[in-house]
Image (cartoon, rainbow, N blue to C red):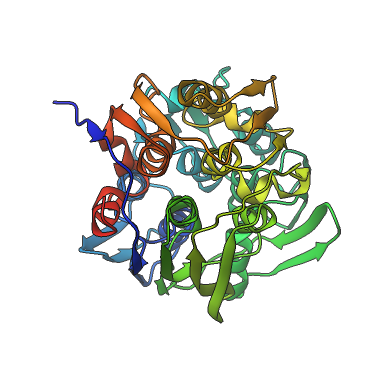
Length: 436
């Protein structure tokens, strides 16, 4: 039976501390990198979400051994070899991250491997990774979406590639393929999250990175083996963002979120919210295996202002714009968000859905193909019934709606509550702990 969330009143003031679940991007990358080592790798606080479980299922199919209990996971990988069984089939579920980056690991597969996904993922374009992997020597069926059938090459050749989208998934897929090639691969990549580079640096992989204002030049040499990777996964800033906005838009509230990954390539949401007048402060900052970690303190904000959001922050906040739009709806003035066409290539067409939900809330907005203009109203208060359904079970649409219902009023019926299992299974539990 479909699980539905009903919210008909605002959350009461709160002053608490919480811990959010492990970072999804890091969890998936840890699983895939660990599958390359024949030694045991151990992770604590691994996110136990559907996307991560799909990652584990995939590497098991490819020959890795996995033990996962509570939030501790042990992996003994299959090295750089791909299981030689013919007609292998792996399923990425709902995860675009998994689906795109695991293809890089399959670059040396001697047999054809089929990659499939759920209904939502099967609508998404995979050409951004198909193109560079073909340059390494991979072969694909003539499709650009799932299901894909890929056959690798015994001798992947290094490539030079210009990545123009700011896609960390594309960049990571290329780097994974480069590990199995003979020679040095060079990537000129538009700025995007850099978790893979940091993990490979920590593992002492021969990788160099030259940074400029808009692009990074990454050079990575092929290797024959990789060390194990023991890791304590920090909290996910994308999950934190929902509770940052919950606190900002609530009355007389404050919140401390402990042990969060505040990698500079991921904190666009914090920069944007602070620019709009939110009080957010990093405490207890430290470095853990290349990643910046901090506790995040946030308070209610009474005087929020509009923003003409700089495009340079888009890639570092791409998963958080839905929740940022809520803050714009409660801010004084008109906010402008540009060049966000990438949002419509996510689990659902998120830019379109954001405009729909704002319309349901009575917030004037103008959407074009790649941009959104929001007329804020600091006195916004909803006094009607709002139903959210048919959003392709997009976890972030669900969580955005729950935060809106908890802070702006109205009587909400939000379908597909189980969608949060994709990235943040404990979302509703934490919301309840805060007084929802």
